[in-house]
Amino acid sequence: MSDATSPRSDEDITVVHLMRHGEVANPDGILYGRLPGYHLSDLGRRMADRVAEHLSGRDVTHVVASPLERAQETAEPIAKAHGLGLATDERLIEADNIFQGKTFGVGDGALRKPGNWKHLVNPFRPSWGEPYVDQVVRMMSALSAAKDKARGHEAVVVSHQLPIWIVRSYVERRRLWHDPRRRQCTLASLTTFTYQGDRIVSVGYTEPARDLVPPHLLAGAKPVKGQDKAFGA
Image (cartoon, rainbow, N blue to C red; front, side, top):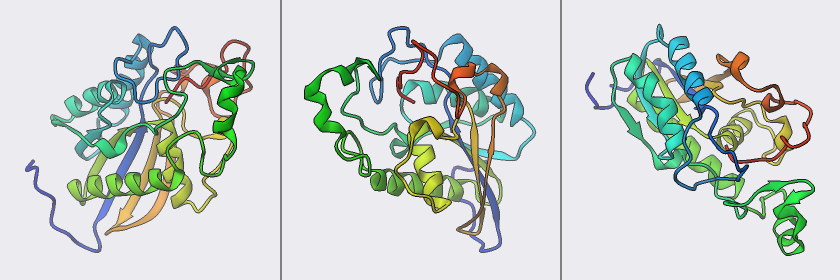
């Protein structure tokens, strides 16, 4: 397939699968955010392979990922399964976070230090990281670019939990501030946007690797002692 954008039509149906990466090797429980050097675990690679198999019969003509290693490694088997090169889009990167590089959880880590409490004063913006509205702008732009590359076909776009949930919330007209424990965006999940022309007409959600996801990391799961930290997504 040519790398050129497909001809435009207001009647084209284009499907963009926005995927969260697989599990990351992170034994120290660090909120890794945008830090380099965090790769998929062995389980995370199995998750990526599972989704590649799930999508193998789909009409995927474009695969693009965040520049972070965990997203690139998740996208690689999908691109390979379709005989495609893997593109990179900086707009798909993880949200910036003031607590990056620290452990972060209730009762331990960064929240035990009063000096950090000032960063928690505004959950609506939020005060601890990249504004939600900025995430919406860059993610909508990245989705639109992927849609244009795959017009009339399907694209796979690999990103991170928070930006995925925020752009979905925007499209579905929900408030952007939220309880992180309630995000419907499990590891290796697909949030699928269907476009008619340039307009999003539906949003779907599937978890092809659900049986591989540790139970405490599923959306809505009750916290487990020692396993409730937000390490990054």
